[in-house]
Length: 246
Ligand SMILES: Nc1ncnc2c1ncn2[C@@H]1O[C@H](COP(=O)(O)OP(=O)(O)O)[C@@H](O)[C@H]1O
Ligand SMILES: [Mg+2]
Image (cartoon, rainbow, N blue to C red):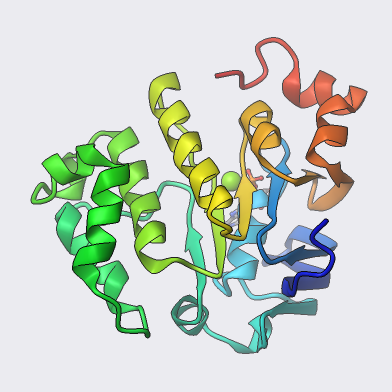
């Protein structure tokens, strides 16, 4: 369906780790414009390490990783961000002592094209009325759910060419989780290209086009999100009763 679309990210046999710990063991995958790929797997599988490697926060020791025309191994995180790769890390990466509105202004500052910030802001506040009410409040005083919305609001401001979302529902109540997934769905519907890492496999698979299951630094299964959601191993390990259900 999307095979005629340009490749946004192309990863071939990458490895990375922390000193003697190998976190990524020869991973390959592509993502095309407009696709949403879910990466699921247990704690410690290497999902966050993969996100960090893709945004050049964790050095890749071997293999190839290309984002648009950029060789990720030869590009800094900052440069990748400026060129449209936005990584929202686990734990959100909001700064406790900055206000909501300052976070959004800062996101805007990394934009190259000059568009009207105010217009963009209206759209974001339309999506997240709660942030509008709290626009002058310090991020550190927001609830976990509100901080996650702020993190995602930055993505709406930046309109990245590739969004790496690491565990957006982590620690959130079911109500906030639903709200966050609604916004991710909307970004997807608007054509954003997304790599979504989630422990909440059920929701991630419901939203994604394709899925990859990761264990011990390797990709152990991949397919359409629908196929993966019906895979007996996946059902038993990641979708069963009581397994991260929210
Ligand atoms: N900063 C770090 N230093 C050393 N080891 C780490 C660090 N971060 C992660 N690891 C190790 O790398 C492996 C993958 O972790 P991680 O990428 O965080 O997995 P996931 O996000 O799937 O839970 C684990 O064995 C973890 O202990
Ligand atoms: Mg993680």
